[in-house]
Image (cartoon, rainbow, N blue to C red; front, side):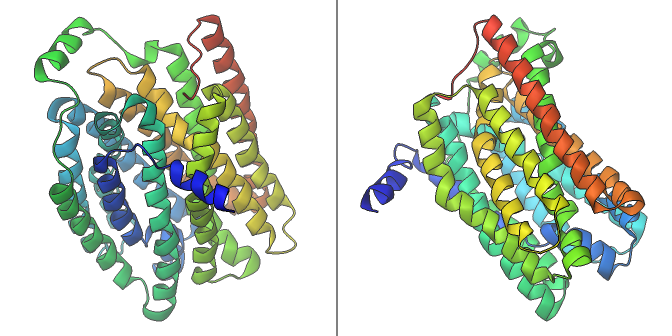
Amino acid sequence: MKNIYLKYINSFKGLSKEIWFLAFVTFINRAGTMVLPFLSRYLNEELEFNLEDVGIILSFFGLGSLVGHYLGGKLTDKLGFYNVMARSLFTTGLLFIALQYVTTFWGFSFAVFFIMSIADMFRPALFVSLKAYSKPENQTRSLALIRLAINLGFVFGPMVGGFLIVKNGYSSLFWIDGITCILATLLFVLLVKKKDLHTHSEKKEALLKDTKFNILQDKPCVIFLGISFLMGMIFMQLFFTMPTYHYKQFGLSEDYTGFLMLLNGVLIVLIEMPLVAWIERKKFSHPKLFFYSSFLMGISFVFLLFDNFWQILILHMFFITVGEMISFPFTNTFAMNRAKKGYEGKYMAWYSISFSFAHILCPILSFTIIEQFGYKTNWSLTAVYGLVAMLLSVWLYRILKKSHTLLSTN
């Protein structure tokens, strides 16, 4: 037991103080983001939109996310990650507070589009900041620590959020979301020292050298973006379709949904950092990790085809979480390792955009399928996404091996 504890502690060693501060700020922000896991139920039950309308509204979330990631990447390369992160966090806080007062279909659609356009500028900038504040050999573990902070917040957020909804309704959640974003901004400015990834002359020289560069000419990166998109299509089910499924199929209230989300967070907090350290020591190639992850995430939805008892949700959550832990910390590293100097923001933007496309397509496609054909048809299609991602991972492995650029996790 002592050895397990020491290995867990050792997996955190060597990370910079700025990364720890970023993790703390991320935890504060994520712990306050309570309304998002329950948004589909809020729209369906509180505002009384049907599931197809819910899917359309949530797709506006994805459209806004896509715009935000694109602008975030552009602005990060021009203004620096620090400025983008601070301004995005603060503005998002104000907008979340205002969202509770929007109740019409088109009003909510455009409101969430605008909010996500601002909020998701943060993500590419955060990814680039990891390179600025981490040594190359610590970059993946730095991301794993940020993910751990996100999931620690995820442990508290949905659990407390579900309790608050049952006791006080949804209104208090919007206030908490907004205030914690503003608080996170203040902590970020106070705790994290501003730093540039490249000098101005280095950045200008790199950009002039590759003025005709197009990321879509990078074939391995395009395949990788396809894998990321499909993983996103699988993972987004947790936030969009699963909360309504919990109620429609098993009659579970919001607090039970919160506890199932808690399981995801607890597993990541306890296992992910040591798992990442172990994977780095074994030096698995990135495509192999993507393959294993796609299999586990896809198979988790096969289990839902056997939904005669609610405990199957625990098995589903375990498998999708393990799949998430195997690949998600390394997708960021893969994208950053392929980025040309001066284009880090652009690469991380495209990486984030692949998830944004999933964010757009997943709710509108999934809820339409559920309305027309039922949940089991949607779970079957989601499992197919995992199969296709596995095949793309094999293709990526062969291309990288042929070009002698097959990167291990270390």
